Image (cartoon, rainbow, N blue to C red; front, side, top):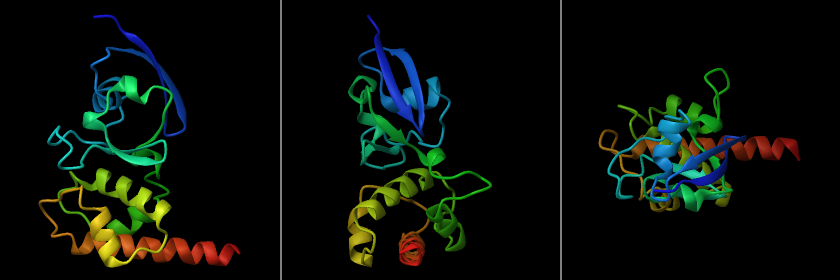
Length: 163
């Protein structure tokens, strides 16, 4: 099978590679670029563990072909913060116990990041609706919602202070 030249900008770094037309973005990220934050869960878009931000939209990378992502800007959990400087969402998930086993957490936080870009002050109902495509088997979601609401509050306070 012939390979295609693919260019991606992942977490601010340009990457070039050859990919088979049928190769999935999740496999390119994890196996070829060693970006292991997005997890392979259901491989059918139901669980959301593979969620990444692509060109300003949340996508489930288990059903996006690498060829479809050619030229895209992609942000994964690794692009949001570092162990020494957590993104406010990462910090709030930690402070509000929005994670247990952690398998779903990278997809949850990446999806929550896009939600707060689109709606900086969401209600609990809006958060629950926006996060419905990301499943967690451990937490019951209450602390995830609290963490996202706390992150929104923190981000809004920083924004107001800057004005």
